[in-house]
Structures are given as C-alpha cells and as structure tokens.
Amino acid sequence: MSPKPKGFKKWIIVATVISATMLELIDTTIVNVALSQISGNLGATIEDASWIITAYAIANVIVIPMTGFLASYFGRKNYYLGSIILFTFSSYMCGISGSLWELVAWRFVQGVGGGALLSTSQSILFDTFEISERPTASAIFGMGVIIGPTIGPTLGGIIVDNFHWSLIFDINVPVGLIAAFLVFNYIDKQEHEYNIDRKAIKIDYLGILLLIIWVGSLQYILEKGQSEDWFAAKHIVILTIAAVVAFILFIWWELRTDAPAVNLSVLKNRTLAITTLLTFIMGLGIYCSMFVYPVWMQRIMNFTPTLTGESLFPGALIAAFMMPLVGKAIQRGVPTKYLITTGFILFAFFCFWMSTASPEAGIAFFFVPLLIRGIGASMLSVPLTNQAVSGLKPMEMPQGIAINNMLRQLGGSFGIAFMNTYVATQYATHRVQLLNYVTTDNPMAVERVQQMAGTLAAKGMNAMQAQQAGLGMLDGVVTKQAYILTYLDAFRIVGIFFVCVLPLMFFVKKRNMSAAAMKEVAEGAH
View 1 (tube, rainbow, N blue to C red):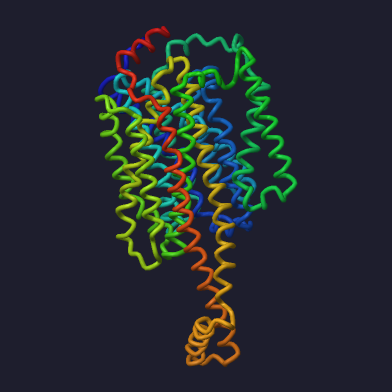
View 2 (cartoon, rainbow, N blue to C red):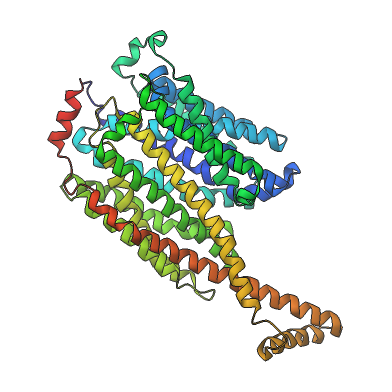
C-alpha cells in the first residue's frame, strides 16, 4: 500500500475535495431562487426555465453510478481533474449564455462534470486517511454534504437580490480553477494509474445505454411529473414504461456481463446493501422536510430567500460542529446502529415540532427545531457514510461509494416529487373544505366580507367595487389558510415516515468493524 499523505499536503487534499464536493452540491440548489430573474432576462416562461434545474439533475444522476468505471478507465486523478475542468468551463458558458436552451445545454454539461465531484471526492478523501481514521473522513465529507445544499439557496438569494443572475455560475470559475491547480499538484495517482491499458478495458456499452435510459427517464419523471399532471401525460407514461423495462434489463445485464459499467455485485455485501437503503431513506426524508421549510418561510412568513437561507445557518453550523464529534464517537466504539436510530428520531422530532407552527410564530420558534435537525443530520450522515465502505475492499470502494451516492440523490428526487404531489393534492382538499364554510349561510363569513368592504369603502371605493374586493380578500385568506394546513400536514407526514423506518434499525449491525479488521480487509486486497 502506498503511504498516506501527511501534514500540509494531507489538509490541502482535504480542502480541495471538500471544495469540489460543495461546488457540486451548491449548484444543485443555488439556481432554484433565480428562476424568475433568469426567465425574465432570457424571455422564457418559468416552466421552461425549470429545465435549467432538470437538465443538471438528469446528467448528475446518470454520471454518478458510472464514476467507478470512468475513474478506472481514465485513471482517478485524470478523471477527477478533467471533471473539475469541465464543470468550471461549463459554468463559465452558463454565465454567458444568451438564450434559455443554450443555458439548459450547458447546465447538462455542467451536470456531467459535477457527477464525478461527489463520489470521486469521497473516494480520494477516504484514501487520504488511515483505515482507523475513516470515521473522521466521513465526518469531513458529511460537512460538505450538509453545508453545500444549505449555502446554495442563501448564496443564490444574495446574488439575485444584489447582482446579475450570471454571477451564480461565474463564482464557480475561480474556485474551480484553484481546485484544478491543487488537484494537479497535490493529489497523487494511484499505483495502477501509471499502467492503464485502455485497449484491454472492455467498455460496457449496453449497460451504459440502459443506465442512461432508466435513470434519465426516472429523473425526468420525478422532476416534471407534478407539473405535467403525471400519468395523464402520454410522454410520462412512455417514459415510465421505458424506465421500468430499462431498469430490469440493466439489472439482468450488469449481473451477467464480465465487465459491468456498474458493479452491482458489491451489493452482496449486506452492510453496504442495508446502508444504501438507509441512505435512500435519509435522502428522501431530508429533502422532503427541507422542501417544505423554505416554502413555509417565504409563502406564510413572508421571508425573502436570503432571510430564509440565513435562518438555516445555525442548524448547518451545529451539524458542522457535531460531525467530527460523531466521527470520534464511532472511532471509540459507539455502535453506528444507535447513532443512526438517534438521527432518525431527531429528524422525526424536528418535523413534529414544525407541524405545530403558526403564521404568528417568530423566528425564535424555528431556532431550536433547526438545531435539532442539524444534530440529526450529523447523526445520520457520518455513520451512514462510514458504514457504506466499512466492509469493502479498496477495489470495490469506488463502485460502492457511487451506488450509495446515487441512491441518496434519487432519494432526494423521490422526496421532492412526493412532496410536490402531496402539497398540490392536500392544498386542493383543504381549500374545498374551507370553502364549505365561506357561504352566504355563514353569518361569520358574511360579516367578515362586510367589514373588509366597509374598510375599503371608507377609503373612497364605491360599494360594488368594495364588495368584490372584500370577496377577493376573503378568498386570499382562504388560500393562505389552506396552504398553512397543507404545510403542517406535510411536516407531520414526514415525521411519521421517519418513525415508520425505525424498525429497519434491527437490520443494522450493532458493532462497528474494528480498525484492525478494516486494515485486514484492505491489506487482503493487495
């Protein structure tokens, strides 16, 4: 085994891979708050502008599971460096795009480059630390995973409020160039990278094609299903059939071929299989809860995107503070089973607390539950990241990490798609229920309209206009109340979901793999 980097070089590598990880994750959320400005500037509708998000997500999720193969084919350092350069160049091109579809095309290319940054960063980070220090590496990587998406909307809000939207992409350029310089100078090639015979490497073209079809179709369905009325749209039905058929053929082919693009056999490792399932659940639940929170703060509390993002900072900071402590706890033998269980319970507690919110609640009401969420995030992210690779041989690690990261991303996509549909359906239900009380037979409703109309008439509006305006104002009250009830229900159902997954903890190993055992596994592969 090659010696691990020490001192300054070690921490330069850490800073580099965490910067790359955060770049990738920030770009998954930073655009969300800028769609209105982008669509207005480029003369497009909001619906068309949403392709800026969808194109990046589709490319990202397609590439992530192939990072293990691509790193083997090109060499991990070459692939990582090339991906950073591609991500940086496409960011620049996004910033100077003169039309929506040009921007969408470059966002897709950016997603291709960004797909490598998550899994390959994690693999390099784990190789930088000794086997016994992997919980610390998991904690460091977890900080990037948690802080990146938190910074995204805040940074996007500040830029949109004060500068041109193109700066959202332009800020990637200097960071990407610095990261590329550091990778070139400080990250060493692995021993086998010096003697790669690409002619001898069999490329699994069919597996890659099937992967593109099923993952691309599925991601499109999850991103666009709600806005296009799900299965009422013919192309959604066609894509669903394509995704299911391609997925079945992909599984069959990858388990059959000698040189799979995605080595699914690593899932025979029970620890990785259970961890991957839990990672999917974590992604689903976390993205569900964090989809609802910003919408509540902006639609109900009338917060700006910047203030909404700033309200998340205390929770992100406590998560960053807790992650090294959780890593140390794992190193000292605290069973990951207990940590993961605590994490799910804390997330459930956060959701149930949020389900008691009201429009009159001040910002102080949200401070404690967001801190609880931050602690819960550290309790989940660090143990799951560490456990995913705890029983893998070094040659299996890139594939295991890639599959685990893909499932987290897909879990997030499933969570957002579910929550989009749930909010739309539940809002309609609550609105119909509330409108049953807003009738001429209800004296309280009639009195409320008369009060509003009287106030408007006193300001100079004629009686008929005042009456119509009063009815419109009451309709606005009904709409807001329907959304309040919907978002409270949404928090509640996510909390129930976290409680329901707790029985899965019985399948998690109680004891961690010892450092000696992990070292034996690693050395046995060489």
